[in-house]
Length: 259
Image (cartoon, rainbow, N blue to C red; front, side, top):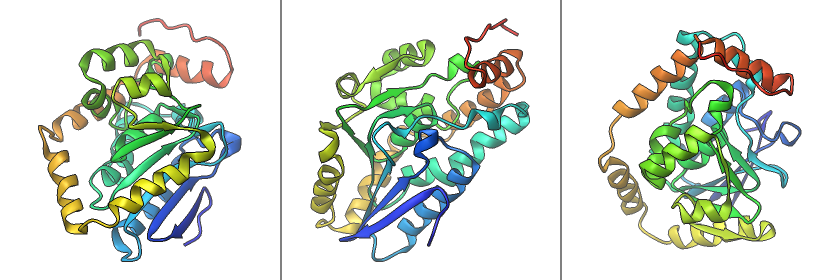
């Protein structure tokens, strides 16, 4: 299947999905979400695919966030619907996939990009990777599961600090916080992930699927994600969200009013 915003490659039962918008730092937009959904469906359906990799084109970014221009006209209802659609079409689908999907993070993984990496079963990062949930700079919060998945990996205190400050952290800090499994040189990134998947691919597929299902089921309910989607949507009814998006697109610092 051909895609407008993705490149895909199947080699030795490993399906590599490359988000291919390097001029936009691989930012997520509606088309990327729809095509990622279709590509992940291929992972579910194809007997030729035993595991998958998600990465970004170029050296600068895995995914540097969402396409902010798509936020400008959203109100609370539309904002919540956007988050729910993305979760159902991509993020939850990745997390619950019975085949391993690994994030190979090269460069910036910010906002929705960080959430995309967090939805994968684990993360291998290049030494130049950067992670962050800077949505507060736009008067928003993470809407694709970030408040839930980051807390599970990094713990409540780290997650609170990262999401309230919007701080961008290095690959080394992300590894220390439990977000990243391993750091390698950029040129070694895909080969390292494939090496790990080649080991996993020798194991019993049904057992791997049950490992994923059991780990995801550990103290894990939909309630937290539903609450996040609702609060994400509510942000779009605020003046601060409008100001945050406008300031981003105008390349200036936002002036928040608390309204």
